[in-house]
Amino acid sequence: MSTPLPLPLAGIRVVDFTQVMMGPCATQTLADYGADVIKIERAEGGDLSRWSVGDDPAGPQNPIFSSLNRNKRSITLNLKSPEGMAVAHALLERADIVASNFRAGVMERMGLGYDTLKSRYPKLIYTIGSGFGLTGPYAHKGGQDILAQALSGVMARKCDTTDPLTIYPTSLADYSAGMHMIQGILLALLQRERTGSGQMVEVSLYDSMLAMQMQEAAMALMRDVDFSWGAMPFNGAFATTDGAVVVVGAFKKNPLREICLAIGLDDLSVDPRFSTFTEALKHRSDLHRILRERFSAGTTADWIAALEVRDLLCAPVRSLPEALRDPQTRMNGMLLERSSTSDQSEELRLVSSPVHMSAAPVKIDRPPPKLGEHGREILAELGYDESHIDSLEKAKVI
Image (cartoon, rainbow, N blue to C red; front, side, top):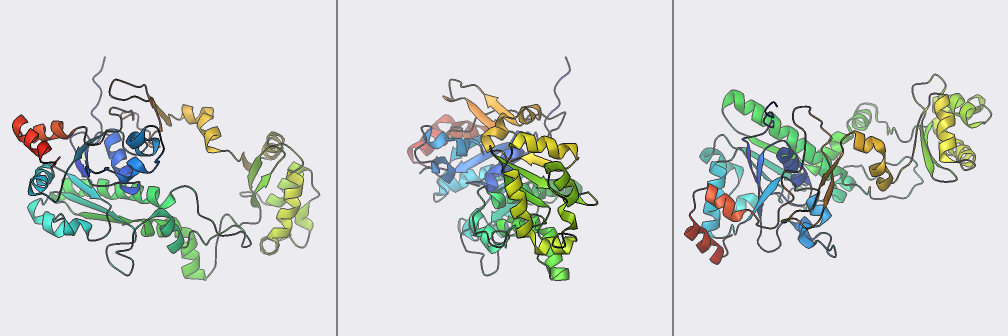
């Protein structure tokens, strides 16, 4: 039997001050691919996501926390004490990456800002995630996904101008900024291989939301046009007798004619209101009223079958539980499971990484850590003896 290859980030150590979602989803990915991620937490409650589901039976090991913190180790540190700060520096001395996502200025006030650390640890990759950037009018504003949706223009963009404003229910800004954080870290690691020097990597929820709108932004900046793929006249989601179907009228010479043929309507593309793209866009609400009435008369499965005969892009509108049960989800390796063990009372069932590497499969090597679970182990690795560790525990440093 061949020896398994080391994971891509084996030997990389991350000192992780992040909490909630943006930072933890980034550092979890690093941990999934072999990095030793040491999670620094407050003794009084730890990561805020440990308590974001207040009535969950697992308490601080709830599914929200678990979804973002597998394969990490946890140590609690009182960074207001000289002894706690000494431990932090002992970790940083051996680290490749430090990551945080506090408000601008918090790391500096703790004495752990980039300008303080870069001369002491010149190879360190200093990664910071913020809500809106480290300078500027919003720098000290509390960063949060929904606020980034609102300030970046994402929340205001709608498929139908008559729809009420709403909050997108999935954490778009947190996840996209977390993925941008990973990109920056990996690029900095590659550049360090060539130069021998670390650097600061900075991402924000706000910038990630602007970047996500790159096509729409280019149209606004260069054509002064409010462009929206969702508002295209031949795209739409329509209720059926037992659910809903989404149709994308693209990559066809006359998509509206094809849709009408598929669902048994007279050819609406000859109607002057819909005969050109510009006219159809202008009269989108009239067109969608006709389509809604037709789709409401049949089942989702029947409409999908009819649309696919005409090679039209379409799909049923699923709930998340339905998507998780879909055979494609399991076939793609998107579910991670770990049976309960002596140190973990509940079976873990989590979503995996969407990056599939043939020589680096993702698995749960470590369940999400209990608060401070690995403190003694980590200190022993740093050279602290048992009596010293006991004294730090007694003094509530760890």
